[in-house]
Image (cartoon, rainbow, N blue to C red):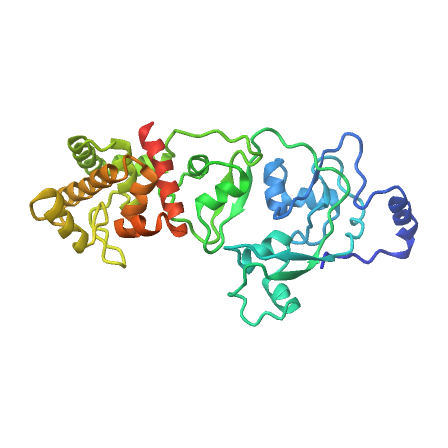
Length: 357
């Protein structure tokens, strides 16, 4: 529920005058700057964006609890400090949310400014980890939106997104109308396939005007430089087999970050993350000699040979090539690209642009 402040009787007349005038917050002078709170905003983010402190915002708007702001609330970000508490917030109302594929209560609660516990209680949900696609959820305690229009945002405005369980850059970029490469660059992400739950991502071009960024993030560039020896091996093998160099570099970075000693839980080994069974198949059908998955050059040579095989088999269609590398040739031939494979494909294609630059 939005925070309510009990006002002394002597201020009731002033409050009535404010409401009669159509205002629901501390009145602003003509020279004051005002922002409208959006879903997911926090007072600290608003303060940072407008170059003021949280305490200044609290003073300007008479905010008692900095953790209690709501979507649609109008906040002054400049002017004289408020001499009285803010007027009461609009009464909360309930809305209904229809669960879409991939959604969870964490993201839904954050979207509406509610809590997992409140939504679970309102909908008699026994296990908050399980939602049904198409399920209708009553969202309690959601503040109504204001009728006042939000100020126009500058071109290519940035937003902050907090990563929830199961999210990936493909879905996040699509949600905000941004680009994977732009988000990677803005946040210095070394490996686009790995996001941390709770990680805060700056989303550039959230108004849909994003352009493709081709410059490698500084953090990733530093790691690439440190692992130059492996990068040179990949380049040499790619050139020898006629595989696009940036493509091979991107696959290897996605798979291991060019780390020769990495072993996955599935038993995939090394720079190109080959399982012993796959390495044996490549050795017999493509190379004609044994592959040592624990030797960096042998590992890279087998992985690049496998990419060459898939490029030939799928007539250069990178989407199918990457799907086969991820889910297997037979699965692609029989079922096409799995839904779960698509973020992997998109991530590597974004990385290829970075390495190509």
